[in-house]
Amino acid sequence: MAALRAVPFRLLEEPLRFELVYALQQRDTDARASLDPVNLRQMYQALRRGGLSTLIGSDPLEVAELTTCTRHVRVLAVDCVRRVEAEHRAWSGHDDRNPRLIYLAELDFTNHHPPGPNALADLSGFTQGWVVESLAHWMRHTRNNTTTITRMVGAWRLADQVLGAHDKPPARLGSTDIDAVVRAITAKWPSAGEQRRRMTMLWKLIEYGHRADELDHIWSAISHASAETGRRTSRLLESAPDATTTSPFGSCPSLSWTGSWITSTSSSATPTTAPWRPGRCCLCSNAAGAGPWRSCGFGTTACPTTRPAIPFSSGNG
Image (cartoon, rainbow, N blue to C red; front, top):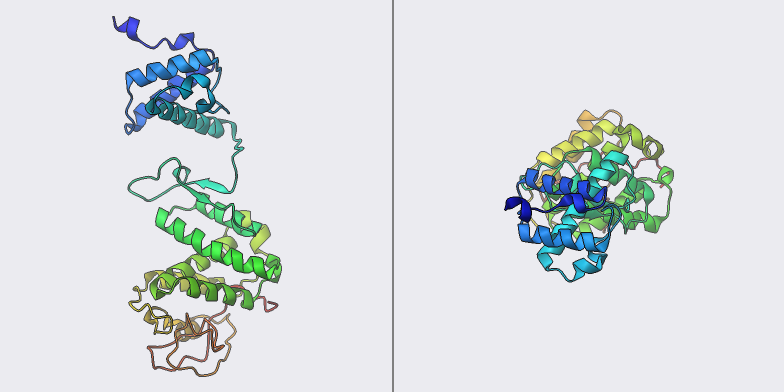
């Protein structure tokens, strides 16, 4: 009786029969997707009547027989196609999808619950190709969580807009360019804590670009006066407590150490003197011309007279 009610996959054309069996086995291995025998039978009949010979490169929703099926049957067919195409890409080494759409489910995440199959990081709106290549390489070769990915893409999307307006090749980026990026970040995110997190994403990708051999053709042209300084700055920014103030001109204790710390630890950075400006945050003191990199102290303390080396420090910006 069971044999009479079984789905006869052998009646399907090759390699469709093996692809369908493989996809169903993967669903069973995941143990997170239910399998309704009735839906499977309906999908099988629709694919057989549609005359398909493979699931590779096909849209099951375009099969006339599947358009009249229930939503659950169509979802099952789409999931089977997704699993088969993913395995085919891994086997062939060829991916014809949009390279600017990074599917998060294919990345190495630390999340307890992995992202869904349709969650992605969309880089299609970026104008700077070198930023897109660096971001894609960082996402595919590091282990992060979805929150870090979101902040990284958001920070560099804003940086891409600023750098696109400046219209400079990577080799000509200078201190004025990174200053403009920081000013844009402070304007977009008023919270001092979020400003710190977003700027940490800037330093993290800059540091990664200088360390990754595959990105040497990009970042070797971008001056990096003190890579060790940028690395330490990023680590301390990440470990610093969140700022409690949201005022754009309030003090920023989490960054108040920058000027004095960089003077004592970085011998490769060239100190730059600046006029004394009390009571201004290093994140938001651009309006009067003091620059975003000077530490503010604690509200009424005078800003130090030195600032750290700026990652884009070619001096020709």
